[in-house]
Length: 280
Image 1 (cartoon, rainbow, N blue to C red):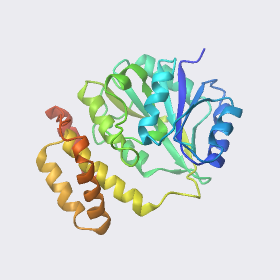
Image 2: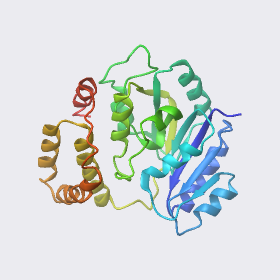
Image 3: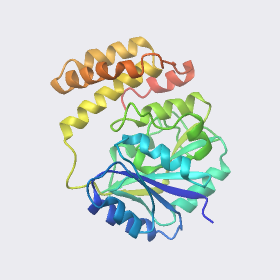
Image 4: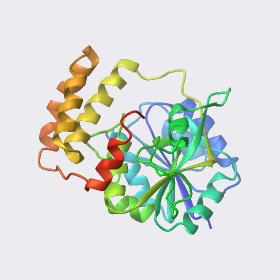
């Protein structure tokens, strides 16, 4: 029986999902797959079912929080996330389980991401490899405070302990809040380059400008929720310098009532680590 479940949250990307699910079943790791369909209007649910995945169909789009449903439904100690256009390299999940078992403080392992047919290293992976936060002895690689959600494996209990992904942030920079919450709870997060994920971004990508606005929105909301107020002020001033930033800031203001009373700054040592990543 597998010790890890693969969780995929998707919406209206049936063609991409068909390919990635075929890759999942070819890995040899024998990991069950749960697909959470964020209210797709295409044949996403049917494709996932035919591929042998367990399907959770939603009546409305929950964004990144849809992954939380997969984690709660998983019957394994670990859950590996993938997007509809990404998959884990054969053998990576089995190796990840071995590493997590050997490092009980690790709540999250971030894999090395190779992009496209050319398998270019993702810039986020390259930044994590530089180890700006050092290499703690009780973790299997450089400490991190951020990650790409399509390429991590998490300890299920730790993920649920901190509440998973925020339903307010949806998609676009949703990872930072979860990373801060895990670190604040005393868990470790590490980059492990021997674990590899392949990411072939869809040619039918989302609107880049809309994504930039969402990232600004979520950065500001995360700053309010977990970081010192001067950081929030600096990020707001930076956002107001550009058109997309201003629209993202307005979106954050609109979402503010949902998080107004949820502010819980992280411990000083976690904030110090996050501040050290200003250039990453």
